Image (cartoon, rainbow, N blue to C red; front, top):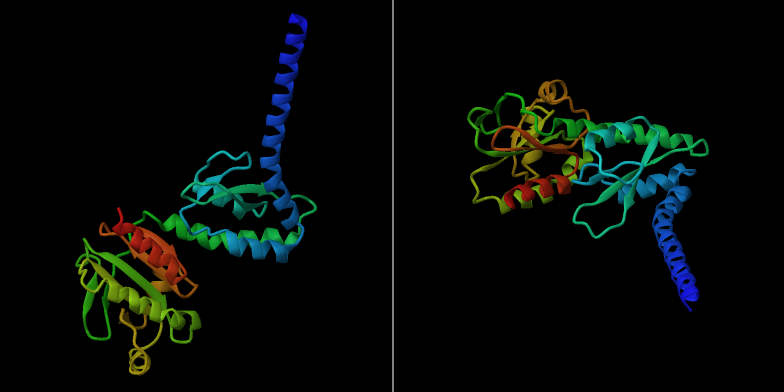
Length: 262
């Protein structure tokens, strides 16, 4: 009986180990299967990437082995064009993205696309925590704005131009945001446009935009800030440091509102 009990215990331990191994293997396989279904088809991967991966968000970056890494290291891996990001399903408050290395069988167009798409977000990420450049601006109503005068204020800055369709389409959402902060004098909404004063005045006579509007800012936007995609939104902290740089109104609004919760 003792011998039988020992054998039973041994069998129980072996079966438990195998079950645990299978369970662990199943967790890994789920992401591996997703990767396998994506990496050989650029169109399919791109749909997944744009639907599930938000590189401008406050995500938790994971390396190939699933361990946490810095966001800078994560972006630098994507910039090589040798990796893609796969969302790791979890109950965590923050999204988790894990790096998966492309193979010889991967669609070659993915490498170029992930590198190009990641560059913009990497550039924005690297601006976070940096001081916003000095400025002296005058809006259409003759009101002046300078970095020194706005110290202690939170700035929501938008770059745009009249022929930019997405820039115009998001205006109602931005107008609503300005209304929400109407009683808060510590938040300033400022827009920098490429267009002339006359062109903007003609447009605004027919279309409401509740941001302060500063004309002819091409040099400041493209040379000083280094932006070439419109619209671009920048949230600047009261300290003058850049909090977030994004390209859509919802992303900017989320970043702005997150500051009020701190």
